[in-house]
Amino acid sequence: MQKIDDLLLDQKESPFYLEYQSKHYTKKDLLERVNQFCSLLNKQYAQWQNKKIMIDIEDRLLFIIVFFALLKLKAKPILMPIEIKYQQSLEQDQVAISDNKTGSQIINLDNNFNVDFTQVHWDQVASDPSDICFFLFTSGSTGTSKNIPKYHQNLLIELNELSKAFTFQDKDIFYFTPPLYHIYGLLFGLLLPLQANKPVVLDYKFTPGTIGELLLVKEITVFISIPTYYQKFIDLDYLSDLKNIRILVSSSAPLPLEISQKFYHHQLPITEIYGSTETGGIASRNSAVSPYWKPFSYVNIMSSFQDSKNPQSLIIDSPAISIAYQPTEGYNTDDLVEFNEQQQFKLVGRNNRFVKIAGKRLDLDYVKEQYLQYCLKESGIIHSEEELFVGVHQELVFLIQEFQPVKDIARIKRELRKILPGYAIPRFIIEEKIPRNKMSKIDMKKINWIIERKTQ
Image 1 (tube, rainbow, N blue to C red):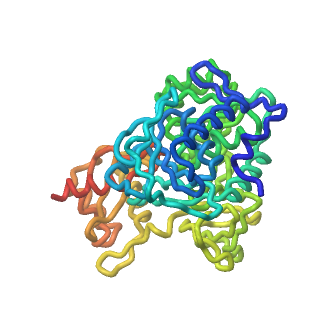
Image 2 (image 1 turned 180 degrees about the horizontal axis):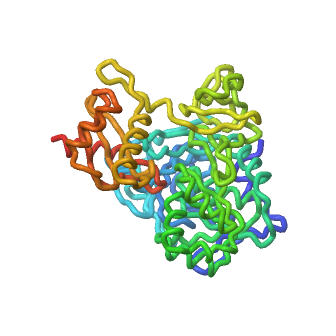
Image 3 (image 1 turned 90 degrees about the horizontal axis):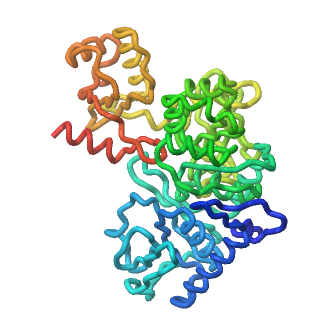
């Protein structure tokens, strides 16, 4: 069976290379470094097969070398977001390789491949004998980050689909902003260019301004990013400087329609990818052309197409899903959709946005919609849904908004009572920046901290 690490072994006439700090690393160079690191690890510990090893590495090149080395040793890498504070929870049966943390059960690694194994005890290192390729963490946008397995089959079938969906050219060069420990960054920023045999620029730039300069200097033609950066490019009036980019991809969070339209009008269509860590890719679209998502060929939509006018749950069967579910029943994505005649779908809401307050069912998206309409009526200003979060704390509705209230809070509540039931009236209206993580998803842990602070 083909494995993900086989992508690195195929070196025949490959134009692929990693450009990092003005140096080029071909597949041959990369494989040599992977083999060197494998030898180094084997000198310290001989039983790497099936061992669960955390990767917590900020340096992109080091991350890739360690990732492929562990796969070559048949270990089970766990890709750790650097913001997870795992030092407090690292058990004796867990080991981490890190270039930014030290402590018990951590193998410290630097850019010169100097390693320190002195803090590691190998007596009981956890194993996983399955055919899982690696583990990674969800973003934690729902409150708790979950550890998700990814199998070789999950990844290869999605890579094959993406290779057919995009038409790559000889001159194409990739650049990506998402982190490698996120499935979107790893799949599109590393594994897809390996599959397509295209170069990747690894140098990490943080600000949109420095990224824009790098895109021009390096003549990037394939850009993988998230909605936040696309919005910043508009704010900085950079769109005319991106004319050499042929392929733009966005995922991890909804791309506002106005961003998609702005880029499209500059002949820069953005392809959005819909999916999750658990499901893999499900569908793609360009919202400036159509609001409907076109499912990938390997996705079987199990929802009924007969009642296309009413929202219904999106239920799928897909070989890209990496968690347990009943294929005969399908996997419920918790998204509400409407179908068109081509069996494409439009997202209209989330099932998990329904809550119960005092035994009464409430749609939080409906509260958001009514509040935004009220603000438009009062101020004449159209606010984006991205500027408002509606939640529930101890059966009380609260709002966090990134814009100033149009009137005093007491009046807002009085006016909302005319259009919302009493239990749906926001008890707290907080003017504050909505916290988001590095992938532009809402950070529920910080949301909970904000509301707890405000209600004390």
